[in-house]
Length: 168
Image (cartoon, rainbow, N blue to C red):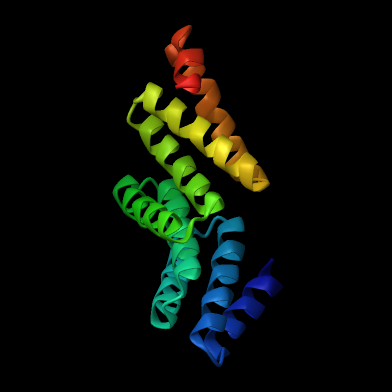
């Protein structure tokens, strides 16, 4: 991973255009995140978001916001995670992206679970599952495990009411 981090950092710093820099910063943030260097990953995603904003490309901005939501959630900064989750959802609605809407709902479900709002967490997780299934998108292992924890914990907290919350 160290070599990939170095290559992504070099690519981001030497990219000839902001669109290229945005992609390199996303790669850098992803590699840093795999090493659990979460503050460094967040800084890379923020740089990628700034580059995407300069280009004005909505999909790249939404992806950067989604990455920031996920990593802020992983650091326990739920307020920042919620801000970026909402930005992701707004852009997803504007451009009609089921994948980005699904990822936004994944973060929202985990935020609701963190707040012991189990019916809401269940509903949001079910919405995420449906959106991502409809788009054919497959989750990476870490996010898949987090989604499974929301489902399991919600079922434990809601008991018999879990099925009704899923079917809402």
